[in-house]
Length: 433
Image (cartoon, rainbow, N blue to C red; front, side):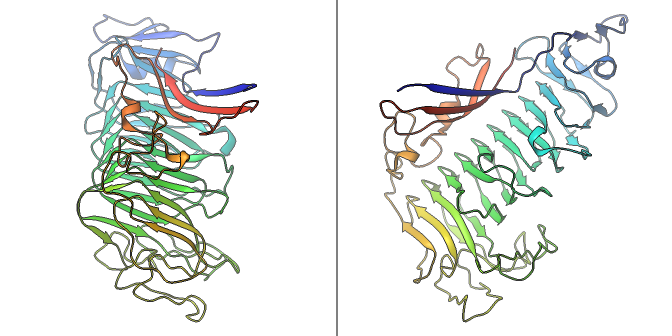
């Protein structure tokens, strides 16, 4: 092996002119520069690159608006700051904001639109080890890094990394951008999502891996066949619904797309396109292959990749024929791999889609796809479920969590190494210093 090039993206940042500003409500008064009695006054006085270091206490303040690159952290490592108000992020290109250890209770963290934003220079907002009602970043040009947090309601975002959280629903919404970089991805890994996971974004491929899930609705995704959208090593709870929309050749633009309206896309002569690998997942009970039905969350979507009794074909039947046994609609381009999930998908007919339909063993240990891409971290055959594969939940548990400061959550490197090879290793993580 000749060289190893390591790219480590850390969310923490420093500035040679940075100031530490301390907040303690027990002070008789602040000095307006380094000592403050409220978080709001410290944020107002701060400049880009400063740290706001907060004493453990309960802070009853109005809505906190943050429009600067700051790091807001507890004074005592691992402590919790009770902040009884909403936090509003007014982002800008190049912003780097970290909020660590906040308990907002019934309150939320949300974002404002960014004017003149740049997808290659996003506002990076990292919310780490917090408790929140809702996290809503439904605006372009943000990168949300939501890590090790408890969300009692919903997490909504358009680009980012959602790792090791618990929440009711997770919504990956669409940006008003074209696909920017085939190397980028949306990353939803190692979470507990109690109810719905909704994918509605065609800007970047996604990895949905090693989560505990219930219902999955995929209604819009990046279509380039050079990309693969991975759904792997998740556990789906009993009576789950799986929905993959069918997009048909109807219009040159997305028209009226959203959770509750019809979606369509022109693909020229391409027709339908699928590029999914649904592998190594575990089902704890029955599966409903969701169909067009007003009782579902997305009642007006045109059709469903996976079989349902109300499957619709809305274009030329001679070209895109389907029957009640199609699963998926094989009269499509691309690939759809359903393998090593312990059950086979439904019957399929001959068509143009490259379709893999393998049940695999029902056991968890070594029961996953034997391809090197899915190896466990110990380089053995993939285990099915949340403790298998390269994003195993076991890999995210620090051996000494009280003293562990670095958290690497996304590590990419070749699965096969050869003598003399140049190796690219990419990693994403954060450091809490």
